[in-house]
Picture 1 (cartoon, rainbow, N blue to C red):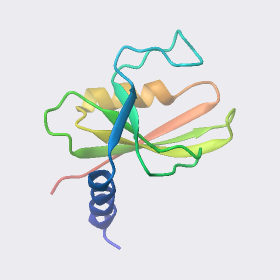
Picture 2 (picture 1 turned 90 degrees about the vertical axis):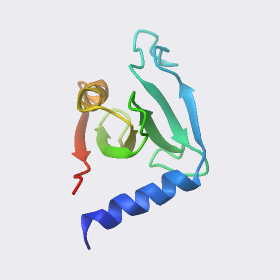
Picture 3 (picture 1 turned 45 degrees about the horizontal axis):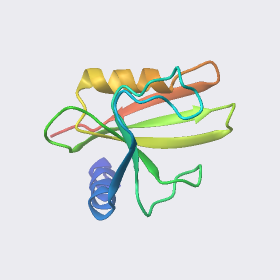
Amino acid sequence: MHPDHFWHTLEALVASCPLTIDRPKGSPHPHHPTVIYPYDYGYLENTHAGDGQGIDVWVGSLPDKAIMAVVCTVDLAKRDAEIKILLGCTPQEAQTIVAFHRGSSAAALLLERLRT
């Protein structure tokens, strides 16, 4: 299957589900007040991720809120793995988001969408 199919299917999912930003840029993490969200962070309503919550979404500063990448995360402490969708993020914002998800027990990998 061609990789474009993945991105088009993900676009259809994002387009069909309302986005809720529950952690705006600059807000603290609810359980770790010293951890500050560098960009708007939320979830797609009516979806389910590995943690049982909605699929996570980061929203960057670009006016075009197209999907530019996903971040795959693995957290040994929480014993979970998820994807986070990046909408309208610059390459620098994407790197900041990846760094946000890396820690002593967590790893993150950026999968960028190649535009042809």
